Image (cartoon, rainbow, N blue to C red):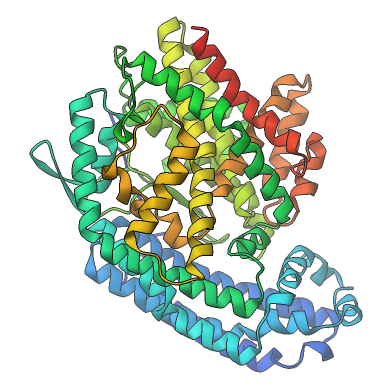
Length: 588
């Protein structure tokens, strides 16, 4: 049996003292200065060929920045509590930010070009391949500030919002929860909520609340500061709502997001509310407590404990059955040490896939504990990794899909793995257990993330009128949880501080709806896949969609599948999959 692996970051740098790293820092500074001297204030006078060369040079500088930043971020995620790594990450943030200030003018000056000037500059073949990047830059034209203001904002970032995010991360990483007579990390304590032992879940609920409450004053102040910082910048940039920037970066019209949020909200009663009433009845409880939300719905069935090797085989087989290309794209993650799955103290909470840069490869992080959900997490993050590798040929400026579509490949990978496991399971009770687990995963992804979006919307809107008290933040949290999860729960004061460990609130405001978007989109896509007789054709179109990276809009991406995200019925089609699982559970 192989233990969960730890990654090697040597393909980026061989250590903080790697001479190549020091050389690249100097190179980044020098090339940024050279780029500024060569092009600042001169775009309008360039030929199309020279403009193409400028774009290629800019991309090279950005990729060098991305390599340095990725290494520092990944190294820190190995142990967020390591002071040396934290100082090193801050050093890289500061030095890359200084270099970034030198090249800041480029996007601003692209947006200063008239349509006629841009058309002339874009005529050459060397520029045409960057057309999606230029189009994306131009989206921000109404929100650009004067160059000097942009420079000040860029320079102060490392000691404003980025600094407060660092405070939050280090606070969460340092948390120790007393559980079952032992000191555990917050991640390990949260894992107890999946235990069939209600006594342990109850203890975990109380101890986590106690731990979160200790730091709630600091975390609440941090969140208020980050909200105010965002509010000020949104005002200067003329963003209409707190979520407007996220919609723009996702290249989504607010109406599309609104249609999704409305469809999900309208489904609460027939999805989460109905499922949790079923779950309470199945567990013999009059009411569920907050610590029962993730409890096994079938505690009498012993869940299979996976070794790392079993998990890898399960996921790879699911991907291979779908597409040999996906399988071959996934293999290097396991063969070449691109995954960190070993649990340990200080490790960054949760799981992620970091795309790094096209000249290297993505890295995946998770903490593997042998549960079925860990297998699904592996499938999820590997989906991201496959997507990122397929999109890398687009180059650094155009490889990154909007967050909403970045979640598509990951959730689709989960669905492939789930369907593969379900098809192989012949025991009826075990199948019911698996469907219940999938139902809960979907509720956590669609319903819960929508509730998170509503929490952020209320909090950011109220922050315009002044700092929110800890009590008010907890009150908002409780209200969106009650609305989304329903009357099967009896939420008490113990649940108040649980909003404070949701890192997306701090790192990436309004990111969360991307999960709901991705899950509903995948359900719709999977329905198309199941119904089509041309499986090969679907796989080819799906692979092409992922390989496009950030070069297409959601309408262009979905058109080959006959889907339209602006149609409310599209979201209902995705939600019907969730409802179907609940129907199957209720019908026994």
